[in-house]
Length: 264
Image 1 (cartoon, one colour):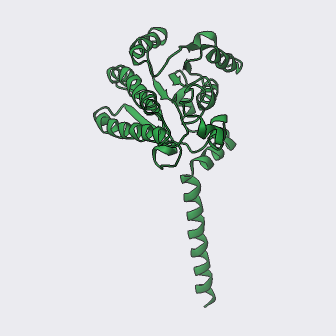
Image 2 (cartoon, rainbow, N blue to C red; image 1 turned 90 degrees about the vertical axis):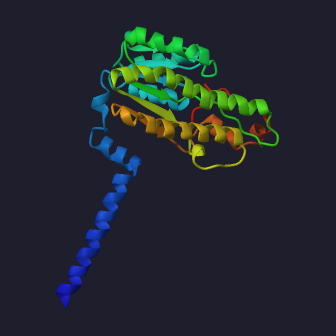
Image 3 (cartoon, helix red, strand yellow; image 1 turned 135 degrees about the vertical axis):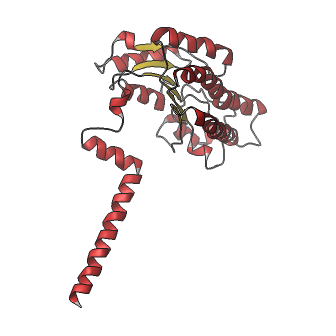
């Protein structure tokens, strides 16, 4: 009787341990924390020597991503509309001590000006010879009730968040196909999955972008060397997010500066 009882207890403990380990493995935050604690992070070695193009790099997620990448031996292309802020981010990256001037290209870019995207892509290829990773991070935001928003607001959000990202991706993709390798990252948003009030135009643009990414991924099945990842972060502590919770932001029927927007 005692042996059966302890056998059941042992089985229960094993199941509990298995469940806990599975949870820790599936939770990405805990996985990264564990890897950092152990002194290494997944795939860091694979990034050494890669050319990474980050849009929306003048602040927020884009700036922090550039800063973290600067520690890993990559060559960086920093794009946004505000050249002065890009230069500031460049200086911050250089202060890491792991990069030289030649490793960072400041390339001003307006996502809404799709006619400039091909020229920008060629500039990167002239500078570094290739593009290994494109991080589509830039985007616009707006917070107001749909009934109060001008139609122009919806147009701008689609032009930047959706069409701008599609355009730049289309410019870079042929180069990756020719090399038979490359990574495309689309910084979407939880809003691209779960709707919420006060940002109908923004959410619509993010749903469109998610649909584009999912469809493009099927077209890339014949190109196994090219991967496409969509990241949908939740709220990020920032002025944009804090403004979202204020009456002033709701009354402001305009589109936010997509270079100032830290999260997607």
